[in-house]
Every structure is written in C-alpha cells, then in structure tokens.
Length: 207
Image (cartoon, rainbow, N blue to C red; front, side, top):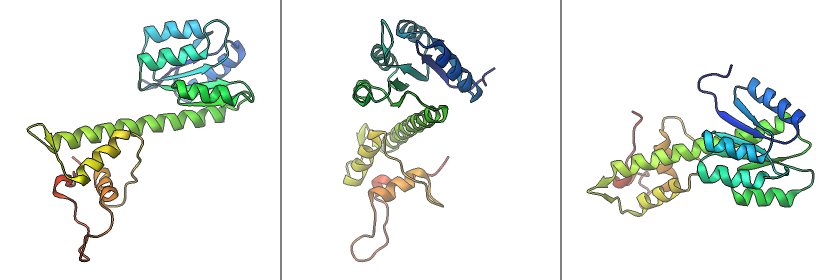
C-alpha cells in the first residue's frame, strides 16, 4: 500500500513483462503506480486523473509515446515525463525532449537508471515550484499600489526567479532569498564598503 503522500505515476509500455517489473519496483520505492498497456489507454487515464509523473515507451502500436507526451503536457504543464526509447535512437530522444519530455532512458536500461532520471525530474520540479513561490512572495512584499520595485537589482532578481531553473545554494546563516540577494549584488560597493542589500531587495527572514 503506497503512503498517503505518494507520487502518482503512470507507466505506459506495450511489453507486459517490462511494465509489470518496473511497476513492482517503483511501488517498492513508494510510488503509486498505474499501468497502461499502450498509448491509447495512457491518454484515457490522463483524462481521468492528474498524475505527477508519466513514464512512457516511445514506440508503441497505435497511439505512440509522442501522443502521450503531448496529451500529458497539454493537460498538466508541470508533470514529469520520462520517455523510454529504443537502443541507439538518440534522434527520437531529442525529438521527445523538444515535444515536452523531461528526460529519457534507452533500452535496455537498469532500474537504477530510471530512478536517476526520475530523481532529477523531481528535483527540477521542486526548484521550479520553490522559485515560483519566492517570486510571488517578493512581488507581494515589494509591490506598492501594484507597482513593483524598479531598481536594477530587483528586476534582475525577478528575472532569475522567472526562469524556474536557477538554483541558489543556501549558505550558513542565510535564508534562500538572502542567498539570491548576494547572487544579484555580489562583491562590495565603491569605496570599499561592505556589500549592503539594495533597499528594494531587503532580506526576507524565514517565517
């Protein structure tokens, strides 16, 4: 029985043995796994439930993995999509990434390879969500009558958080937003004075 906070994962592959084995191993790792025997069934399930992750074979009869990728990304923009490609089909992998896949593994693959790309995808989504939250907090705190802080450091900070891909390591004694400030305003001010955060980008202390 998966834990209550388990991530919901849809595994689509037309090879029953591989699908069953991966579903079992993923369930052991705490995922709540639903199997789909092909692309058509995967699209139907995506219509019925908001999965966190989709793992799909690219080459399947009828509705293939390309359609699964497009259906998943259209319905759930933040979903993690891992594509399984055939041996040596790098072009297919690149095409899948361009269509919205998060990452891929090539057959034959080990379970640890699949777990590696899944963890990368989950970390990427975590950072994206965290940066979106930080941005919303900054906009809320530095918005005066609907007008955001206009200083160059403030605008640069908003641009960095907008990407959703910037990762700012937390240093001892600093909150994550404070680390972002130091990223935006590195070094010292003219005259040798220690770096002082711009008034429009004050430190947000942890609540």
